[in-house]
Amino acid sequence: MTKQPTRDQVPEDLTWDLTKVFATDAEWEKTFAQVKTAAADLTQYVGTLGQSGAALLKGIQAILSVYRTFEKVYVYASMRSDQDTGNAHYQSYDAQASALAAQVSAATAFMEPEILAIPEAKLEQFFIDTPQLADYRHFIEVITVKRAHVLPADQEALLAAAEDVFSSSAQTFNVLSNSDLKLPMVKDEDGNDVQLTNGVYSTLLQSPNRDVRKGVFQGLYAAYGQYQHTFASTLAGQIKADNYTAQVRHYSSAREAAMARNHIPASVYDTLIEQVNAHLPLLHRYVALRKRLLKLDTVHMYDMYTPITGTPQLSYTFAEAKQEARRALSVLGEDYLSHVDEIFNNRYIDVVENKGKRSGAYSGGAYDTPPYELLNWQDDLENLYTLVHETGHSVHSWYTRHNQPYQYGDYPIFVAEIASTTNENILTDYLLKTQKDPAVQAYVLNHYLDGFKGTVFRQTQFAEFEHHIHESQQQGTPLTADSMSQFYGDLNARYYGPETAKDPEIALEWSRIPHFYYNYYVYQYSTGFAAASTLAAKITSGADGAVDRYINNFLKSGSSRYAIDTMQSAGVDMTQADYLENAFRVFADRLDALEKLV
Image (cartoon, rainbow, N blue to C red; front, side):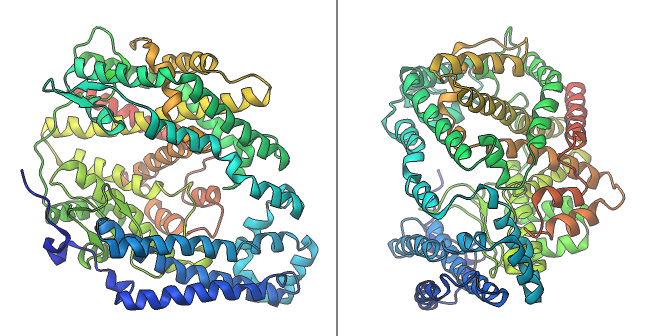
């Protein structure tokens, strides 16, 4: 067994170079103090934003200047901490930066209410009087579009003070699910007793040993089942809070309130659910293929995650993976590749595992820093996908930050995963064209199909359940463990089809999903994956203008427009069904290919 190196043992060329953010810790400490002072100085702008166009411009610029410098302070502390969570010095920096975040947020809280207090006609006159305000028109519009849903100041203060009350159900769920709930001991593949955790559950549910899969599945849900009425109470409390907040803010529903945050029409949600339901026969076909390849009489829900193809013996060192990624992404053109090269060749990536390093992977940085990536590299195909995924985020960030002013220098959550998943789809297409080994092809096809199943189908199932419980509560129907389990069990049976057993345990899945406390969040996983499938298919097939629209109209847009408009200009109208139909066509083609191959 290879021992993990300590941070100081990792070769320098495999670490990120954070001196590009701050040359020294002393420089970070100096800038930290400057941000603290600048945030306190913002009090001079309180009460001034509605005086004139010039005053509004000056106040917005002062506030954004504080945020811009603060972001560098925050990401430096965060990334230094992530590279070795055992380093007390940088843990202290991270804690200080988090505390500073709260101070900056409090110091700038006056901006939105003051802008909203400016009458519409007066605000328009400000734009005429102060032409430079035009650079902030969309920034201001994102605030003022909420005008009809903002309450008088005293009522806003009451709602703000009650925020902890509204979030108490989610907090109780987290404590119960992650701390107080005692999961049982289960058998691993070697017959050893192991303590079941959520991580162990995810791993053992992929085991080739069916008894192991069944044991962890039944063990997990037996534990959750003991507290199903408590979980029903916490979830019902969250739904009541969502509906109440929407009602007092004069929205027709919690869904309208949640989607208004990103200016997304409700038709996007309805179209997603309609299209996924119309294409459930494709999921049923996939389940039937899984049944055949695993040689099962009946597919149980604990059979859904074990691999149905062998793991290919493909191995990539990090250097080889960079070359392979570059070849795959070459379809995006030389300009895109130049930014890939910049990321790959200038120590923007922290590559290998070391003792104390944060697990997983991410793309980070701030407006005035390089787009850094954290990896925990292993020499396999999954890590090649991770590299391509995170580089999709990083190049998206590069284009955004170099083509938009600071106020539009980030991108909305609705589109955040599209660039990364588009890259994954491009890699899948490349591997299918270049890898002739049937075992590799089968693995790559199933990698895509499993991703589609887990994201488009499963997250839409979650979205359908989430909408049902919000509507039920709004109509006065009590949300009990029995009623939610009945609906969820029937929904699961409809999604996975006639080849799948109606395991009673799966009816309780709602009880363990933290995303149901996020107020209409999960649908974005589905729409994003489907949009990425459609974009990648256009790019890899050489559709006229596809690459140009993708880079210039999407990657460079940042938050300068509403997300739905950005996607339309990139060639994907998410208010219509076409992009979903195209995505299901890709799924069907790859399902056909896998069926023929195996």
